[in-house]
Length: 299
Image 1 (tube, rainbow, N blue to C red):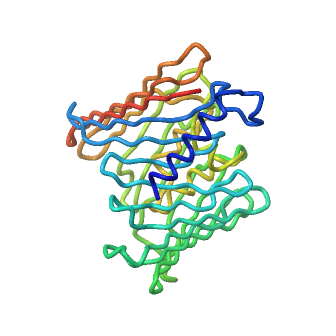
Image 2: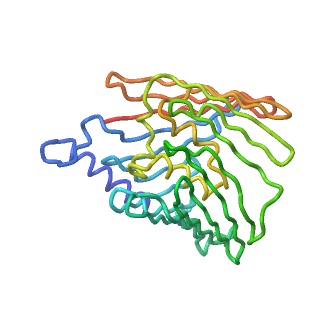
């Protein structure tokens, strides 16, 4: 099934490239067709993945271990992601629901019958109030978490915290406070009841953040939708907020109680001022050197 799907997409791309005038949505006008990400640990290759796009949509991701993901859309918003194992057996299904404005109101994570590792269905529901989003996560057979996000007047997430666990108030928890300057995340502070535990500061260049492929998944509200999408993996939006700033992030300095971490972001642009390569390198006092090279291809 995977091979047939890729061949069909390849045929469509070749067909449109023969005569752009015959294709109402031609991809020959320097549109993004793929991003190849190569991951390294201590300068040794670890893994890779290739993101394939067609007509401004992410259609699939192919991983170096043979697993892959397929993406499905409705009204230009991703509505379903299917995650397959190396043997092409379905592993996870993610579904998305949106309100009339295109904001995520529900994400559901459903394991397949062949997923012997996890058989827990998770449903994340989002309720929008003035300057606030309440997220409720329900995990079968009945565990429930409630989480709160607070926005400033520019719709930036400035606070996040757990509110309750199975209906009981969470008293010993972590709080996140984010500071934005000129639309950019400049500082993120994590603290608990005993005080601050770590702090991250960020710097940026003067190039607008118009290159993130999540805008092809999540429409005009892609920045906040991207943050909410993180809940299906971890219960915090921290870790992607810097990529939703107004400009491209160039550096982050993360100081822990027992160490530190520095991350640099370098960009190369083509003659049409599109990103052709992005390199992210992270040096930590207690982890291997991490590097990710993202290579962009346009057509």
